[in-house]
Image 1 (cartoon, rainbow, N blue to C red):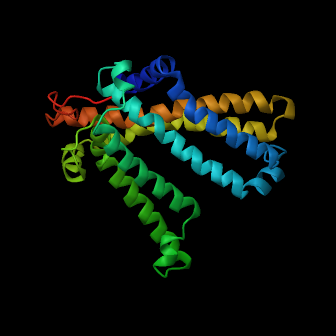
Image 2 (cartoon, one colour; image 1 turned 120 degrees about the horizontal axis):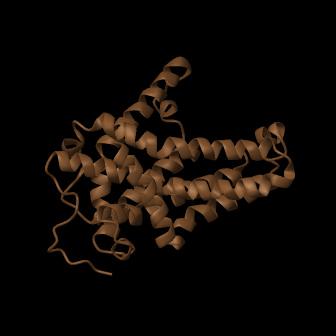
Length: 256
């Protein structure tokens, strides 16, 4: 476990240095969102933060950020599973890119619905405590499904269409809690730093808001990698336990 956690963070730093343009995508979107937030008065104190929380432009950039966080995942997943070969990872290969774009679109739709779509519990005609607890249950079920679909999402980024949702469940069975711990280890530390820097910019003197928000954007860029890396390393381990290979048949020639 410790080796896998170290791999996630070491690989993230190495990839950021080897492929800086891919690393910078979520960084720039996060910076753009900070500019929108700053103009809305979010960093003018607690009252300003509460007033700007529901700003529509801020929410739109928040949606753009969720997409930007997903983008480096295609390349970074390939970087880890193709033995840290930056040149191979940076290629746009078929069918890998097509398969990954399907998952990207599904993720994007889910994120859009969460931010702007109607409440599922409302569509079900629920209200009050029933709606609240049903909402919690849906989130829990979605999170559990996400763990079991990890091998599927990783394999498709590699171009292996043979591993779908059902086979992914079989691969991940037995590695559920290990995967949960890996994801927490790869996401939680940087998430804490991210929120600490954001809150620091709200309460700190205005003169240091810029440096804090710039550092926060860099942390978000690294977080985009560790999120994808956690899934990649977890799926690799689960597949190895089951004697599976997430990578496509070597006979399949990549197309650039």
